[in-house]
Image (cartoon, rainbow, N blue to C red; front, side, top):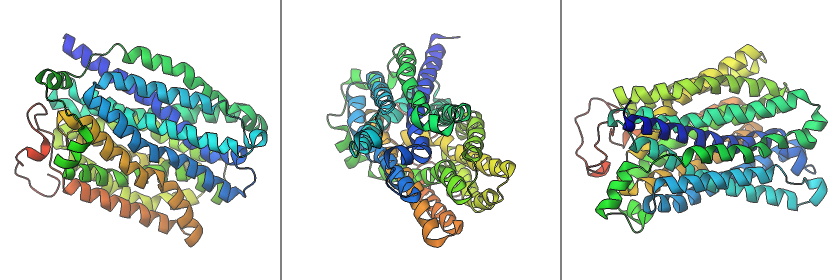
Length: 442
């Protein structure tokens, strides 16, 4: 095995471990926001409003993520990818650990939810800088013909983090009484993050800097104000990255976060029905996301991406009727197929977005396009779904909302060039000549 191949694998492993830990931290909060925080931090509200407000504090992180993308993206394009990735991991790990020691409303009153929201904001800053760096490091190392596959591995951090976070919360909930779980059991997975972050740091400090960034540095062409240049030279790429991501986020958080609320509050089933169903689907995604990335290397980013969009748009109308059966096998089937469609979108997404931007601006451009979409998509999806069902007392309204978001994603794919065969060392996608196309996503 060549040194280059070894280093590529080391970079991919470091990106996977780092993003898994970051998403572990992120999903711990998302899951706890539906199961624990309403009772612990908002006990004076009725159950519906407590969940609604708790999910709103969850959305704070999505607002912070673009800011994290701007700040860390700037330094990623100026100082290098590796250094920034070490900092983002520390930011995320420390803030998650501190959430685990927060006193509840019963101890410090309104200060408790305020501190919770502040720490969630800090989590968002860390994740906002993490995604772009991890994807770009994986993309910019190794064989250019395998960029979709290589860049998909940081995406695997999402289901890996979800499985780890939800699995630990489910385990703590299973082995102890509800009173003990609400009192201290939920804190254990948050405190564990403090130890896990050292594992991620140890791995990340061993990788080399991106060779494409080093070339930019040697040529002396680094951007002084990367984000300003992105806005000036890559407006179409930003619009495409933003719109292509919205539907993916809305579908994902409907399939993984709103399902918990719907099953526990509307169907009044045990929370284990939702958690275990999503866990099974997330475990399958560990293999399906890299597969989708590899398929995008063969068939192109947009065709594979669009196949997932189409599948999710159809399945969302099957998803809720299966939940309404109250049968665990059918609920699990609903979640598994939903996450299969998400994997088809999410696998090629990393390379698709990152390749839209030139090397000297890639960290800022990819981070900005990806993270801003999170506000409109992931941050609001569970809240909007909750309000739509409350207003119409029908899941059809929620399904239509998901389809509208997926239609926006289709527009984002349609206005983008196919970047699979682009030489990232030579030209920016918007400046590159367009190859002949057959059909809208050829």
